[in-house]
Image 1 (cartoon, rainbow, N blue to C red):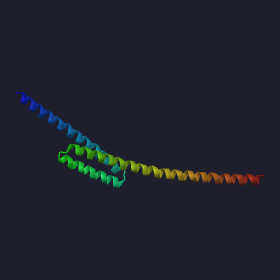
Image 2 (cartoon, rainbow, N blue to C red):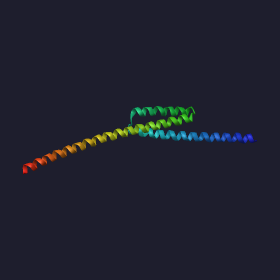
Image 3 (tube, rainbow, N blue to C red):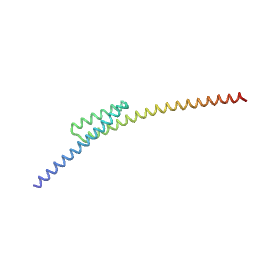
Image 4 (cartoon, one colour):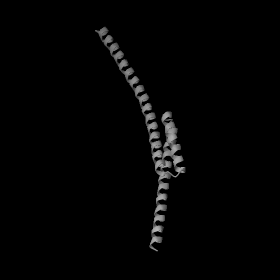
Amino acid sequence: MKSLFLVSGLVALALVGCAANQHALSRSMEQTEGTRAVATEIKADSATVESANAHLDSAKAYMEQKKAQEALAAFEASRLEYRLAMLRAERDSLKAEDERVEGELRADVERKLLYQNILDNENKEAK
C-alpha cells in the first residue's frame, strides 16, 4: 500500500513537472515570437536576424524532441539575438540622426561666421 502511494506521488510529481516545463516553453516561445515580430517590423540587422531565426528553428526542433532545457536555451539565444539586431538598428538610426544634426550645427556655425564677417565689414564701412 505504501508503495502504491509512493508511485502515485512520483507520477503526480512528474506530471506537474512536465506541465511546468511545457508552460515555460510555451511562454518562452511566445516571447521569442513577439521579439521576432518587432525585429522584423523595424527591419533590424538582417545577418543577426537570420542567426536568431536559426536558433528559433533549433528551439522548435528541441521542443518536438522533448528536450526542454535545450529548447529553453535556444529560445533565450534567439530572443537575445533579436534584441541585439533591434539595438543595432536603433544605433544605426541614432548615428544617422547624429550625423544630420552635426551637419546642421556645422552649417549654423558657418552661417554665423559669415554673418559676423558681413556685420564687421558694414561696421568698418560705416566708420
